[in-house]
Length: 108
Picture 1: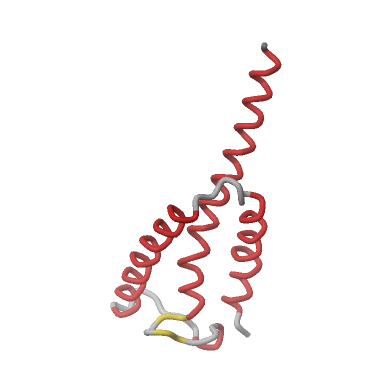
Picture 2: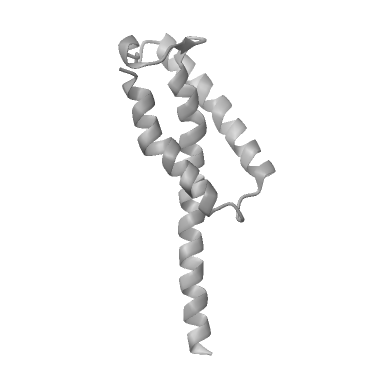
């Protein structure tokens, strides 16, 4: 029951919340919002076309419901997966930057 939503929560939404907290000082909200809006609009258009062309379908017994022909979970996917990519990038960049700055300080 609602398998798509459960998987989104476990693998995308919860990790995003953790990473958003860890990256809170590195995120520029206006830039993030603009990037997510552009990606969201492209993804909705792409998905709408793909579903209407019959390239893929969604199992109705595994989703919460439909909104404009797409599962509600798809809209969450369009927001949270790009956000997760951005969050992972910022987190890894922060780790590598710290390691690099420690190595530079040791050399001095």
